[in-house]
Amino acid sequence: MSVSAIALLAFIAIALLYGIVVYNNLVRLKHAVAKAWANIDVLLKQRHDELPKLVEVCRQYKQFEETTLTRVIEARARVSSARADHDLPALGAAEGMLRMGLGQLFAVAEAYPELKANEHFMQLQTRITSLENTIADRREWYNESVNVHNVRIAQFPDLIVARLFNFDDQPLLEFSTAEKADVDMKALFSA
Image 1 (cartoon, one colour):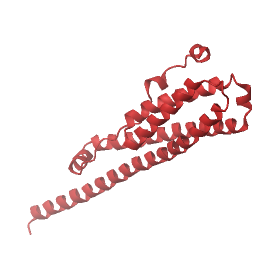
Image 2 (spheres, helix red, strand yellow):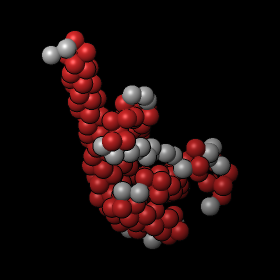
Image 3 (spheres, one colour):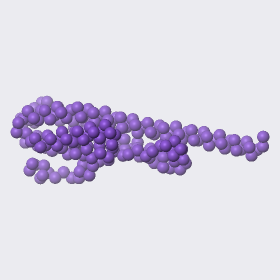
Image 4 (cartoon, helix red, strand yellow):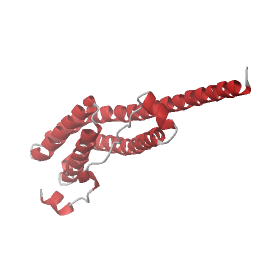
């Protein structure tokens, strides 16, 4: 066997091994994104289960604002639908609506001392607030995993393996415009 044939075989073997290593790293990144999403999904489900309890506690106070409760219920349904469809842009928008609705609900609850004194309401408010904070943390982790994945499949030479095996960009879970905006406190308390 000639030196050039051995060199060619060695080059092919090294290229094949490199391709396998790149493929395995891309698979690992893809699974990291899936795991990060699963962590968010669990928290969304937990919060989804807590919201009807919160609405029922608020409804016990007949004078409590029905429009605020309706906003929370509608936003909850949108989050559930977007979650089921794995539609991250819609989920981000629905999350923004839900967070605004919950913020308004908790702000309006300040005007009802009996409701604020209700132990079940306070427990639910604490639990939902804790879930909100954890979701925000996990969303940051998810977006970081997506960013690492997307950058890696766009860089040469990994993009060759990524295109060959159909590794696609993953969508970020972005905040809605309303969620990023400052809260209008006058509008909140004039409602």
